[in-house]
Amino acid sequence: MKKTILYDEHLKHGAKIVEFGGYLMPIEYTNISLEHQAVRKRSGLFDVSHMGEIEVKGREATEFINYLTTNDLRLVGHKKMAYSLMLYENGGVVDDLMVYKYNNEHYLLVVNAGNKDKDYEWIINHKGNFDIEINDLSDQISLLAIQGPYSFKVLQKITDFDLNSLTLFDFAEFMVLGKQCMVSRSGYTGEDGFEIYASNEDILYLFKELASFPEVSLCGLGARDTLRFEAAMPLYGHEISEDINPLEAGLGFAVKLDKDFIGRDVLKHAKETGLNRKIVGLELLEKGIARSGYEVYHGEEKIGYITTGYMIPNTDKTLAFALVDARYSSIGMDVSIQIRKHRVASKIRNKKFLEKKYIR
Amino acid sequence: MSKILENLKYAASHEWVRVEDGFAYIGITDYAQDSLGSIVYIEVGEVGDEVAQGEEFGAVESVKAASDLLSPVSGEIVEVNENVLDNTEDVNGDPYGSWLIKVKMSDESELDNLLDPKQYEESLD
Figure (spheres, chains in turn cyan, green):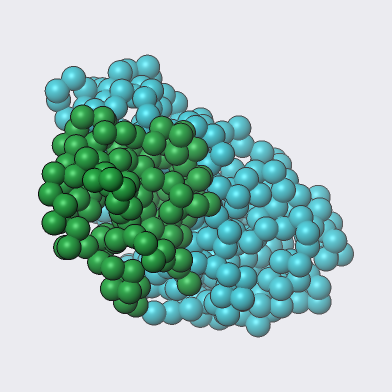
């Protein structure tokens, strides 16, 4: 099992540790509800060094990434990032990723920890004759996310770089407390915030410094998941997977069918003939919490299953995502969820659970 | 270090039992509440329901997961602690003071199948 450079810090701060994506990671330091609240109201600091970083460089880097992934990097400016997906030929998802575009010949792909080795192999296997080189930098780079309304103020205190020059999905390279960093205005919580990439040693130093601010709470993977869920972002293995394609998951904004990429033909055909299944939002009308895998019914007919569900921390609202038969996917439809021995009444609703606080 | 009380019996599935006048008060242990984290929802059967030793009688849910409740004894539910069901954080704060159901036992000899405090402590290692 791997550890990030911050493992001993997590233990020092009393974290409960779990295995995730091949790493021993903090699931919570205090509890998920407090950490969720800290990000919504103040600022939360996350160790996300388990994420994989794969560099693609060379004359045909843009062409290669456009072939490899669903989004169109020709439309993305320098020093900007884009959400994209790598697909199998059948349209299923290899992984979703953030693509950092330095310029037309230099990219950094940030991928899920648990998929990294599979992703790297997939990328190498599709290199073909493209004039590029591919480097797995995951073991050399660590990553922090600082998220929530006070994050700007905190980070600005420890760098001379004007953070106002970055808006959502911009990134830049600059010094933070004398350490060379790459920083993007981005995250996985629906809040304003930043992701900070640096060498392992520098991240250890910056983590200790950031953690010492009174506005900042340490947050684990538990809150990371409740926050991304409330912000209606997909998680690989839940809303997208080998078996759930990005159109079914409602990620069409990142799928540019007018250019060639692996898996395009299947998605194009699916779009033309209509989708059979869709990820929808659900609100439970009775008591209970819908968990991943629970079955969803329309009358007596099973129409799908829950992909993620929570009682939103610090509320009594219970929401879920489900993959359901498209015939029963319209907003307002009455369905029920099998929770242990009961069928719990629920309604299909939009996925806008949260008003996002991005700085655009 | 999880707290274990001397005067209780325990199930390996982390429920405790306190016996009073032929009734069994059932809750979850300090170890269970700590492993689960903040408890946000508890579901148990209703008064009049039959429960059986080792069988599910409800579930306790934290933010991150649901965990089945297994009854340490057989019998009939005669009371449900609605106060704790409405204030689930009490189970985190005082797990041994927060019983969930009171059962009229049908077979007190089943108590011999449960763990004593020392055995339960060893089971946590």
